[in-house]
Image (cartoon, rainbow, N blue to C red; front, side):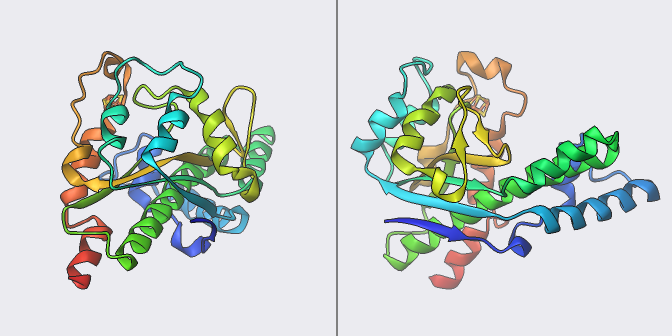
Length: 249
Ligand code: SF4
């Protein structure tokens, strides 16, 4: 299975708390009217200039071994190495919200509209994350239809550049997936263009395979320790996939 997924812009409008988090502002804080107005104006720009799309392809554990090894630059011991071999299903993915929104951000900074440019950058990052959530949900729905999801199944995504998977892993990932088909190309630096894109592997398997310790040598440099929040969210009622399963039995 390999497919391009057209995503509705209304499905990826990010939540206010995620945007504020990207700005380093607590969502508990009462915002000045000026900031609220800025947020509203930025959301309009995001909706106008973003064009979310995704691409997904299933991949066997054996095929992914070679992609994960990449250019041989990964950390020796990594959480993902222990997780993907225990997966029931793997899929490579890439998502983007397109180049226009990045061009708009550049334009705003060039015009010294720093507040608007920075807020749009935060909205676009949160929107890109939400686009990746949609792809995760897409795989979940595909596997539900195939009868391959149980209440103990958890799907999480992992990307090159994080948790010991070297960014150069993008090279082999791109050679297999061809995100160029949705307008995403790889620069020599292994960064993606447009910048507001995410690629990686979706790992579907028992929820417990995703449980990892944040005690690898590189974890001391990690600012978010997001692995721990993501594991909690897997079992939480806030996880839309869990709610879906309640409805589907
Ligand atoms: S602490 Fe950070 S680097 Fe370490 S496993 Fe968790 S998310 Fe990855």
